[in-house]
Length: 366
Image (cartoon, rainbow, N blue to C red):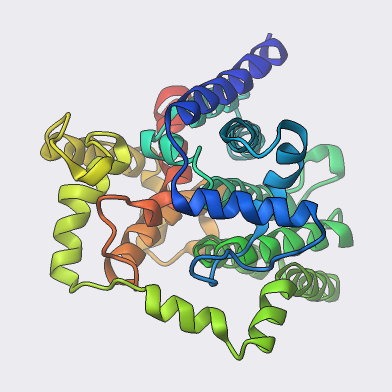
């Protein structure tokens, strides 16, 4: 039964994103990404996006085959990103299979990821780097958990003997390419590194683990090499462009805008364009966020207690996924890009823990 339902969920994710995307006109940044994809088809290979020069051009390489197939059209771009969205939902399903004991919870997670949060769905059809960001976050969590908690079918156990060199390499390569795509993936990688480090410390670090970590690091450098090479040639041109693009406000104002504008827009309570008149009062949207966080604390109350007691080795994989939520909120408040509350794209990493919390509340018993 589950095997029959999953394709329907993936089809739903694809259809929702394609239909929504075709209703939205292309903006200048999306057109620039499409032009870069056309250049790729003509033998020119960009490394960074043509606007700010600090984000990677990975998305243009994804768009290129679809533009070759459908021509330089809005449909080609929207179709490509709808495919990315469908793959993201599949990745969330696979992640849930690792996080939850009960198999039906994985389907619930996939359904939630297909339609929630609303901003992640609506902005996830735009060629603005972020659709791929969601996919890379889900994949990094999935591969890191697969490394540390191998399934019984692979001979998993406390010994960790089933960690193969190519598992480390795949995790590292995904992390490197993801960082090339967008540096905000660093938040996820920090959480993954913490999870891996704590698990290895509990097991006892062996020489095979050190070799695996070296392989992962080397693979990450390979994946990140285009961005490194570009910045060697341009004398850290991306970092210079990044500093010019930063819009940093004071902490007090950033907190206010996060709760009055950012979170409501992210949950879909406000109109995206210009933060116009709200469809739902921002207070209600914040109340929903508080309810979601409170639900997570209650459902993972034993893990919260272990966290407060500094017994971090007792945390389960799902706890590390949920940890990305407070880290994302904190980064938006104190980070260099806290002036985009009307378009809270820097909250995008929070979509993964939010989807996980909703799936926990619906499908996992207390």
